[in-house]
Length: 91
Image (tube, rainbow, N blue to C red; front, side, top):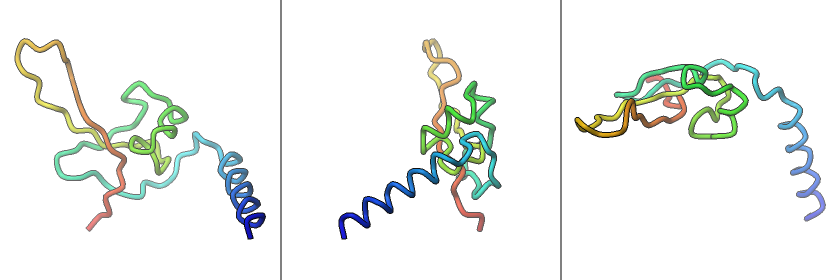
């Protein structure tokens, strides 16, 4: 039983590695209210870099959602935002 589990895990890993990491897939969701849909490249990341961060582009469609945060006047932050992948099901 344990041997089968290891073989299954190895096969799954090989399939995942063999898929092109930069391949664009059809978007599987939309952004939550208050977020804006953008490309990961517009954030200065390549699709390959973004797929390593599941909350950024876990669905590998090269799109993500951002929400700009209010920045207090005089703050050293400029253009601060939070991100999450576009996985909200359209309803």
